[in-house]
Length: 94
Image 1 (tube, helix red, strand yellow):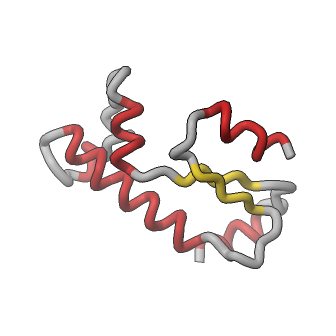
Image 2 (image 1 turned 135 degrees about the horizontal axis):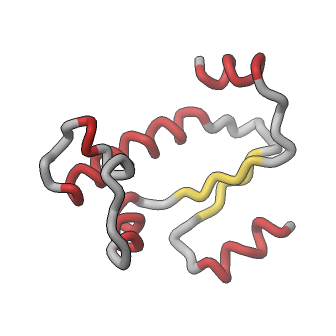
């Protein structure tokens, strides 16, 4: 439904990049900095532990993004974000 609403309200993007990352890897990458309260979904009450809440909240967000992907959309590029940045960059620059 959100996709249909956006289609009527917003212009179609020339290209959409979706960096697909397992939540455990995302959490690991965040450990070098402080995880933000809302980034972890602490306001949603999943857990009092910020790391557990992050895994649950970001996992739910990832699931929603995955359901919005349409294989027929040639303007969406799904990129395996488990790779280092220098390996992902060429995909974006194509």
